[in-house]
Length: 515
Picture 1 (cartoon, rainbow, N blue to C red):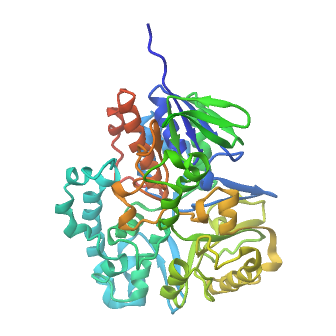
Picture 2 (cartoon, helix red, strand yellow):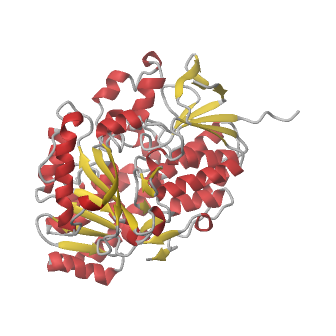
Picture 3 (cartoon, one colour):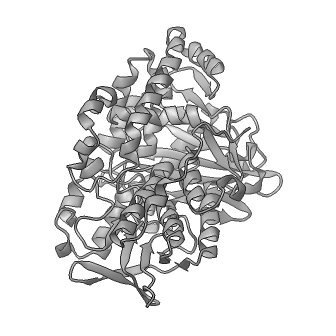
């Protein structure tokens, strides 16, 4: 008699859920993906209106080798399925305290950009890159392995790595070994924003984030990062994955502590296991009865540290700012105070840092002819009683707009033809993000590795986690890797072969087209 085909239900069609669906379906599992929104991607989906198209969240596609490996594992070629352009310059940094850098992955031109700010720091670039190349190789096993209990730390031989990883130091402190000028350090530390953290609080081991940009590039998928999510859905459907879009999970079905399926308004979907890709804290507090959780109760979740949030403006405009880079970052003149206001004081500053994507200089598919899009992001506190967005929104919108001339965007308001704003309150209500903390649980040492919610969720049976709320953490490539880690665990628990998940060997030196 043939063995019954195992089945898995995935809550959430974000990047982690989509990657999991691909690998599990390839392993012969029947997969149902249940997504509350009418399209896939979650925070990596698109907003489309009046001919304009915007990425909701991520706009930097970093370290594509992780997703490339996953596609190799299922017999696909990522580069054939979606067109990506490697950007050069990667981004334009404009410092409120003076000066700017057009950051390029080419060594000598980048040394020249550093020398514009501080000539003495330029000679440290190669040493920084070399040291972080070593650090990434040492840290890679932790990023690619499950930490289901504290004993895994010893298998990883953590003690030998401590002198290299220096987890007790902040990212900014670590960079002082290479760069004396705070603006140069900022060029190699603002990437901590991918984790929703300040470089003055973020653990130093995350210096690998900026290294990844210079070593492997900052890429733009044609159609935006959301196009990657949509392509993954197409591939998954061709593999037999069922998608239930526009269906909110009302509750998880349990038999004791064992999850056996989900209930939506339309149906019940049963499965042998459940993978949660939805925002971790939000899904726990809304879908799992508090009495079934011991380590991650509502009370304990409330006390955890959470990342910052973002104030978003999606602007469809007439014309194109063709002298403004694809990615531009303006850092507040009082950058460190700006970050303290976000992380600790929970107030809105007078000189907010902003990030702007002007994708039209690279990708003409995102707007009608003669028009373009501007994606404007200001890091802000997650939802907090100090900030009432129903009252603060108009004034903060004006503050953000007043920053744009500093990066070369002038006479904007008369050119706006479409505008949408998302605040932390909207992230919480519209996208089901706990406290509107867009980068999930903070990545401080007490919330990493085995101290983060585990890929095989420890409080329940037959429940697995993927996404930014579990190990390894936030950021697209890391979320894709969480899906591979979790898929390996799940296949092992089903007593199915998982060795193929380690067979793909993506070329770490592979390059995509440079724009």
